[in-house]
Image 1 (cartoon, rainbow, N blue to C red):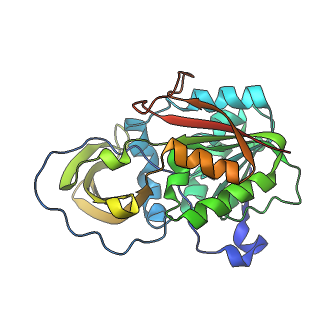
Image 2: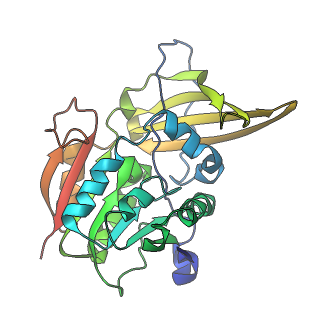
Length: 297
């Protein structure tokens, strides 16, 4: 397992958006007026602070229900595999079992440090390379082309502007071999979340004898810009000691039609649209939206 810094490979690519969308549980019907939506930050803001809590939260929400899908896709398509927004390696390590090489790229140094520790404990960690960098300017153009690129669990929805999404799709196309596959997972229900303030969403221990965590969150909607903002407060208690971390995560709603049009403009041909991780058909009410595309000649 090796961690490379994209900042050193491409200094112009610093401070750019990257992340992975969590499944934040619950919705409220509270009629209290939320605070106004302020100026929108870059999509990568908040993820460095979120890193210590990411695995704990996802173990209670998304769990591993998407992992088998990406493993099966890697087995079918082959490698090497590029993972956008690899985070703490939640998907990276299982997919590495199905291919000889996976390269994961993420903006957050803290997320990658946690991924590195996870990989060092695994017999498959040697199959993974971790890169800190920008998905809008991938540093792999001179390297061996990838056969498969994956964008698990809404990572592309952390790109809050059309120009950022367009740059990412062009960059992925340049890194893929002709005929290579690009798999994109979209979170469909962001715009449907009710707005609320200071709701206790999750609570529990990190481990049987670990510290106790409480997630208090607020949700704001910005329909004009199709953005959903989650304001997070994590309170951690260990005995009499108490600490609190605050951050916000911002995601953009993308329809399947919007994504397919942008893929086609970037040189992809959309092959399949799925509605669940078992390969079921898609419709607008599906629990997930998965788009599989290939790079055209």
